[in-house]
Length: 573
Ligand code: 4UU
Image (cartoon, rainbow, N blue to C red; front, side, top):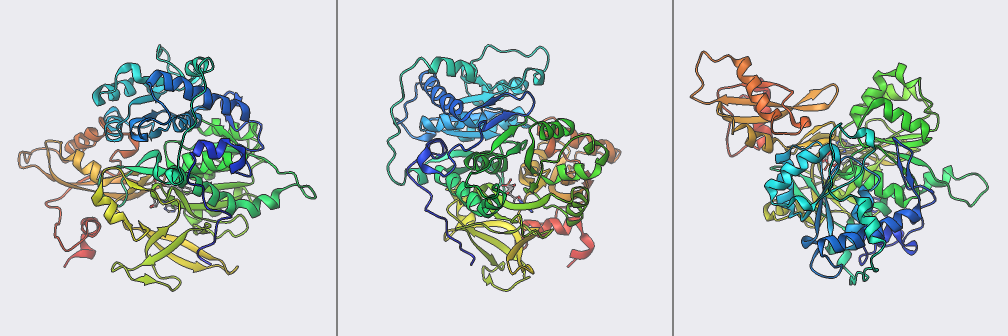
């Protein structure tokens, strides 16, 4: 009962692009929506045919510009980084890159130049697509990473989203498409059976259970597998929604607000919705009023959200009443825990909405469990998707089989990724005997319906989730040590009403720091050191606290050390 089967094995000789664009691979190839991608700000949209054509021409244009051929070299010779807010072309660009036998490495649009530089170097990116609002950061990062300026290209965003005075004569996606339309067809990709399971389609970044952000190698088959797992899991709901007495399928518009640089936006919001034939209403970035207007104007029925946005919904009832949100039937939340109270608050405002939670990771190429539309239990992350196996283990690795007993969750699935790029140590620790170690603590509980539900009860690993974004304590600690007043430090998470959790730093002052030095001034200087170099969601808004030493002992885990710092009274031994 814990290993339901997929209707068929995820194909392993085709690209994600072929899977979604070629009719014979799916039941809903690019779907029933006449507009798979719709701009939530301007209403501009692409039809299915236009998407296919744009992908094809874009691939031809890129092939000429970059001198790439579909069957020459590996995907690692053809890495295109993307540093942009969501645009109508973000996903078509990925598919065009795949058509060339290349891969896309999407970077968080909030990154500083230094953070982007790290990813450009680590991924071996040969070209960079950005958008005008982020152009100056992109240029600085590319320069430091050795990517020539004529390898920076532009993804278009609506004009009014571009800051005044920012222009560029770099080539745009539309330029490539115009050129590509005049170029000969590309030769077909000559992939053999198994290539789709070996080749990386997306290189996303995650710090996993510890350390710095690492490139996560997501294969074509991984994305196809999760797309099929989601669509199979959702089929009963789809059948329920199908107009009574007809065989005709139905379509809907979904909210494409979450960043397509993160696995949730990339696979769940974009790929799985497109596969199911839905229209993705693309929004470049979060703005509460614009989001509500886009939901209203596009009659959106499903909202993909993260807990902080749900909290905003519950706290701004007066604003909500100004918009017609009557087409909404369901919301999904994931990427961080949603409190039961918040779910109940939202339900009291919108009694008809199905409030559904999904649980997943970059390393599982997204969804592991999800609450079914007709089996909702607040606090639960839902039941397991088809062809996934879950195991809960003790710290010693022994399997726990009973209900309600917490342990670390391990996941086996055709969507579990190939591993981390160039990092044997992390691969050995994380991927064992076909299972992925999630670093999350979970329990299984049985619902009155008899269905087994997964509850995430704690995070064992070294990871802070700020508004659903990953913040790696190790990255902040390494950066703090470059501040002259910091001799040693430890970064932990503290709860935050709006963001869920935020980083807090414990700092041991350097001997050079004079006794007369004011702690508040020093703390502020340390915070500023982070603010100048790191994305906003990584800022130490949980405060800086000075201590005499960071307890260190080889016998305790780093997490326990940190708990000892945070709650010294409970951990004195
Ligand atoms: C408590 O955040 C993600 C993936 C999010 C996702 C997955 C399935 C969203 C919707 C969906 O349907 O990936 P990462 O790699 O950024 O972060 C993974 C970590 C997990 O290990 C866990 O600690 O994010 C946390 N997390 C959650 N925690 C993810 N989803 C949940 C959740 N409850 N529902």
